[in-house]
Length: 294
Image (spheres, helix red, strand yellow):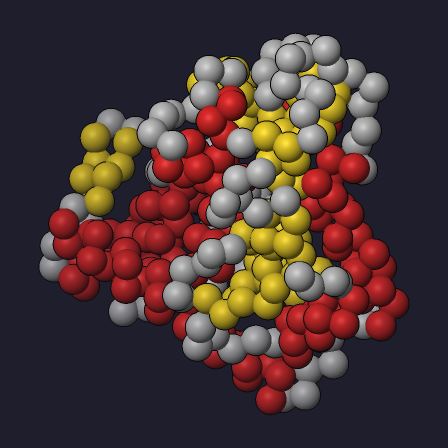
């Protein structure tokens, strides 16, 4: 069984088809298809159920996929460790950051890191925290910034803890408050971020504790657009207080969310048992020394 065939199979599942997988692997569709067939021949059972242009995992395919993801992650760790043992002078930092908060917290660190380690390439992935955690488990990145609490599969380094604020259009009956809780927003239209953003989880779980589901009227991945939607009167949104302070708007008021278990607690995560490159360790040292923890 070769890593080449395992990687082709995993990418077909991740990308949802052979054509998209081929693009990701910089290969041809026929080559990827042959690799998957070779793996199926070795195992002696079909791994994918091909229905037109769609592919779904068979029962055996699900088991092989889960183990293949772990094997590929471990092989990435091994190659990184071997490079370090050979005295690699240059390296790569594979880092995942969420769109919310990264500009404020990490832009200065990028400049500092580049000045200290000019030979290290930074491969940055920007996604919502939930997707970054999946990439971390798969070994596609070494470090990711995400919100706590985190799964037991990760080590954590706390970075910053901030209360959330509710962004409310000026003139709204709730805009004059100093603080607000989620019960006051039960019947209000809410603007959340796109799927995969951890702030959504905080709000949805907080509403559930009060026995209601939020009335979501819009979603976006762009902080500035969310603020403008609030200013236009579409609904109420949520940001960490630190981020909201960076984006003042004359038609928007930021009211502190006075609600248990809704703080925005950002941390750097890495997989338990994973080998961290020297570049990743250097980034962690920089984070510990330069970013204010709670």
